[in-house]
Each structure stands twice: as structure tokens, then as C-alpha cells.
Image (tube, rainbow, N blue to C red; front, side, top):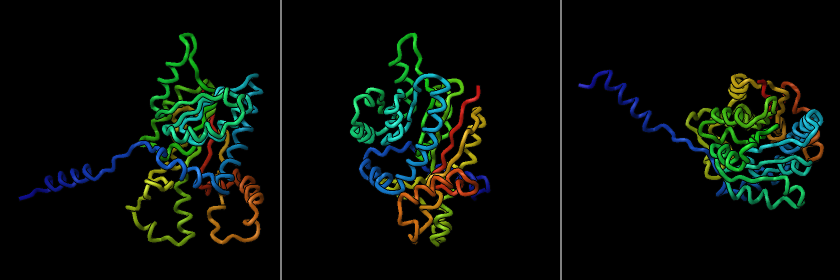
Length: 289
């Protein structure tokens, strides 16, 4: 006769057996698809416009305060557009991604020799990067960074909270962290607007991540903010990326003018409550030691 304890043991075993095994995601096999889907249209232009404004404003202030070009790391860089533009501005930039194909595309986009000279490339998981950096530093020099960019990476990591320790080890005192991540609230909101109630009712729904670029394990804003607080970071600014563009199935009026769309996205990207509707959120925070 099976006891209650036996039933509980069986249920626990089933949970163990069915538990999803998560790994860090690489886009190596779909680099072309990634480039076209993410940056092949207005969505990518909006994303870059907001990040450029936020990051370039802050790096100009940091450069003036320090009196020198910055040491910058872009971890999980993908196509590394922002990193390459920062290198073109004279900063020393280390670019990292787990995908060789993605970084090959990034390298191919660099046309200026001076810009290329300001870039260093590392193909590896971020967990191996600290060791690679240390091995390439001289015995009397430890390279740490004034600014770390981490854009659209958290949602693709098996253990996203762990990366905070890496940031701590690689940032200078009062260094800055630029975190851009997928906003899970935007998934619910967009599907509410589109009437996809069956999808929202399906608690077992998973996107097909062989090609889909919708993450199955996004990290909520409140969780990211708790990590920053625990690791003694102070938020400098927050912005939303694509706060209305993706929610407009019917394109009318100004929606037909890409420049106007970008202008309005920039206007509302830092305003309450609109910024919290962004498909992605950008938090710029400084380390407080």
C-alpha cells in the first residue's frame, strides 16, 4: 500500500526529472537571423538611439571628470555597435561574446584603422573572461574598467544573478554599469493588446528558442534592482526602449515616419510611466564602494 510519504517522494522525483536544464544561450548558429531580426529595421534603430543617448552623455561626463579616455568592457556584445562607436571616440574597448560568428560580423563592420586599434576581442563565455584578461595583463598591471556594457544578456544566462560578482571584480571604484535587458512586463502587455489571451493563460508556454529571440527566462526590473542594491550600485538613470512602437499594430499618422517615431521614443523613454512599458529597459548605475 502506497503511503502519503511515498506519493510525496514520487511527486518530488517527477519534478526533478522534468526540471528544465538551462544553459547560457549563444546565437552563433543564427547570427545572420539575429542581425536581420534585431537590427534590420526600425526596432533596432530605436534601440540604438536610446542607448547612444544614455551612454554617450554619461561617457562624456566620465571622460571630462577623469581627464582621459575610458577603459570599457562590452560583455555579451553581439554585434557590438555601441562598443565600436565608443572606440571611434577614442576609448579603449574590450569586446566579448560567446559567439565567434557574432564577433566576426562586428569586426567586419569596423572600417577605420584607428577605431580597430582601440578594440580588443575575446570569444568566450563571460565566466572565462576574467582569467583571459588576467593572463594578458602584465605582472604589474591589472586591467579593470571604468564602464561595463551588458546589453540583452541577462535574459539568456542560466544563472543571471551570478554575473554581478563578475561586474564587481572588473569595475573600478565608482565605475559605471550599463544594463539593458528584456522587460517581461512588455510581453504580457503586448499580448493583452493583441488579444492573445490563450497564450497568457498557458502557463507552460515556451518560445522556440532555436530561432526565436523572445527569451523564456527574462528577469524582472524589480529583481535586477535588488541585485544592484545588494551589490552597492546606485542608479543614475533608467530608460525604456520601444515604449510604444511595438504596441501599435495599426500604423497611422506619425507611425509612418521613422524619424518621428525615434524622436517620440526618445522623448518618452525617460518619462514615467511610459518608460516602464519599454520592450527593453536600460539602467545605468555606478558602483559605490
